[in-house]
Each structure stands twice: as C-alpha cells, then as structure tokens.
Length: 271
Figure 1 (cartoon, rainbow, N blue to C red):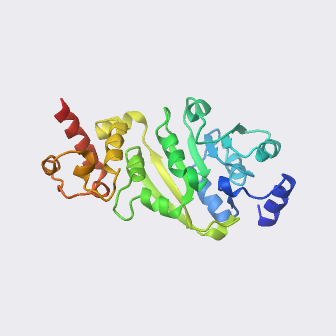
Figure 2: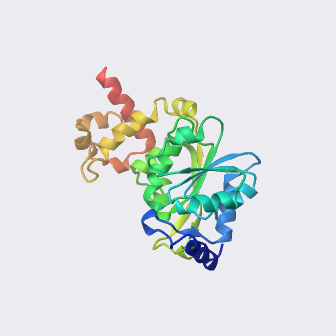
Figure 3: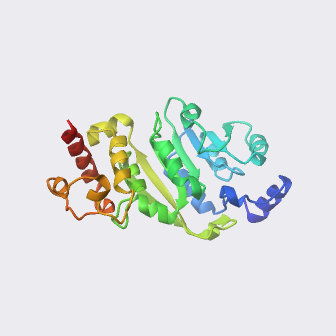
C-alpha cells in the first residue's frame, strides 16, 4: 500500500495512525518480500502475526500459502481485515501483551512473523520463544538497536540477548530498514531479525538446565547493571573465580555459557 492509500483507508475507518499503539505501516516492497522470504513460508504453514493493521504484511503471507493467526488491538481494523481476507485469516482482538498466546496457537508447528510495535518487542519475543509450543522460525521487524542487542554485535550481553540465546540455534539481522520504509515514518532505524528457534527438548539437551533457571539468576545479576556481579548476586568473588570468572566482572560481560555454568554451580552449592 502507498501512503495515499493508507491515508484513504484510515480516513474511512475514522482516523489516522494511532501513535500510542506504535502504528507504522510498512510500505517498502523490498522489505516485505525479504520478510516473507526469510520466513520460508510453505503452503499450509500456520503463522502468528501481531499487529497486522491494514494487512500490509498479511497479504504477502497469505499469498505465499500461510494460514495467518492475527492478534490486533485496534478494533477499527478487525472488520476491514475480515472483509479483505475472508479466507486464511483468523483474528483475535485484544492486547498481545495480555492475551494467552498458547491458547491461540495450540498444537502443531507455527512461525512468528510480524512488524512489531516497538513497545512490546521484548515481551512479544519472549511470549513466542518461551510458550508451551515455540515457533520453528521467527522473523520480526523491530528497532535496529534492539536487534543488534539481541545478536550481541557489541559483545555486551543483556537480559534480552540472553533470553534469545538460550532459545535459539541462530540469530541474524537480515537487513536494516530506514524510517522512510514506513508510513508514518518512525524516528529510528529498524531491522529485520531472524531467529531459528530451539524446541524445549533441544534447550534442555544443549544447556543441561531449563533456561528459565538461568534467566532467573541473570535477572538478579542485572538488577543494578553498574554494580559488580558478585554484589548483585550476594555471593563471594571467590565463587566466580572458581569458574574462571573475574571477581570484578559485571553482568553484561558474562557469556551465555558462563551464565549457565554459574547457575549450575550455585545450584550445586545449595545442595
């Protein structure tokens, strides 16, 4: 859709883009094609799309053969989407941050493909990767800075990068997307992120522990980012040094493997 077409439809629906919901409609055809290509859609694939809006991404997903399960908060768009896509689209109206995704997705393989509102990026990725039935593939358009944090381009870890690392075989930024690729344009650059997810059994086999236990410890470690890790965790520096970790280290400097080793060591010490 062009900006003119988007303006016309929004006018018919009674208003413009809702800034509070982070509505920025993707108008760049190259980026749309890239998202669908990276999602590797095959006929009959179930795809969850959060925030379909006017169906700009929904249309090529369905054209590629997807059965789209959509979550849309803005009531204005429900009837419009149902009329535009009478088949291959099922819509759940509500706040994606509050809805039970497991009940929407159910059993069977699925993929998560969305142009995500910036405000729910971390929560949406967590709900996808850490639900009862994780997706086989995740391709999302998000803020570039957040995407780079997830793939740890700066070598510093965050709770978000750890969360994704423990649930994925691979994370990759596919392309950067300029503000002009959207209408209305956001104030920051975006990026297409692809995550090849692990299933729950793979996570336990690879990490040797439920990643939720590691993340629980990491949350304590990141509670006060400027403080030393030992201080945040309430442990002695010697316990870190026994694992080959500096007593002066901060939470952001530990790798996913080191967080796993530390979690296992502290659990063993509790016995």
